Image (cartoon, rainbow, N blue to C red; front, side):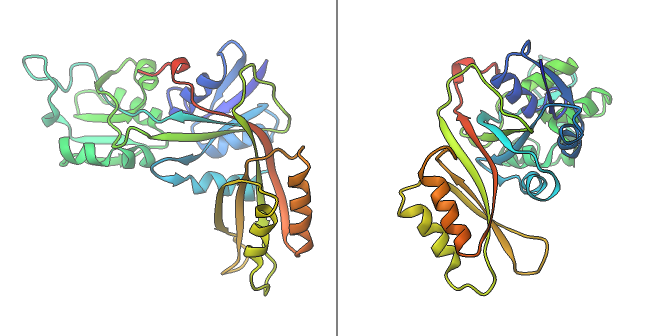
Length: 295
């Protein structure tokens, strides 16, 4: 049985993990901080880590990508998409009027992870604009804090699994501002993993650092993919953290490394004087709504 590190019980990451794997197939190990999730696999305490790296609304999770690039050497072994369904959560009965109807007037503070709070900005402004907003390390941590502080007018933004885990009440369901709020997760670890479900395709993530004083270098890099008709699903620049004004390019190619064309493109890019690092070549899995246990 493989062990997998993930953020706390009841987080979106935890829900996403349970969507990709049957709970009987893996040993789930929870950590409070994303750094501890990474390090547990680096130290060999777990076989894999679940890392959210991109969201429909908020874009890239830069901190997590920087960890993958600068702090650890853990290849990506799988990628999947999962909906970030957030709910307003409170202690049972705390936000109801005398008739048992939902009553927002008693909300004093709303706690959640900053990304989740941002995803629900319109909802908060409409229903509880006066409430103090406080950040937590994860949505599940926010739910736990609310659980431990009943009667104070504190509510949390979190998952249905988080509410069920801590025995709290969902005040309002699916409060994100956009219905298409999905998060991209990657499974990272030293070894390949076999999954029972059918993948939707293959992807290779490549890190390219351009040579200095090479006019048109990025154009040459993209041309190496273009003339071979290799489809890029993402390209993003990030600072190298070594020298001001220097950047690397994070590129997702919709092709496995086992193909003929991609290795040839990479060799051409290296010939330009670029540094190339393969972050992983892995299967991708689309969201299958009928299998998701979200409420």
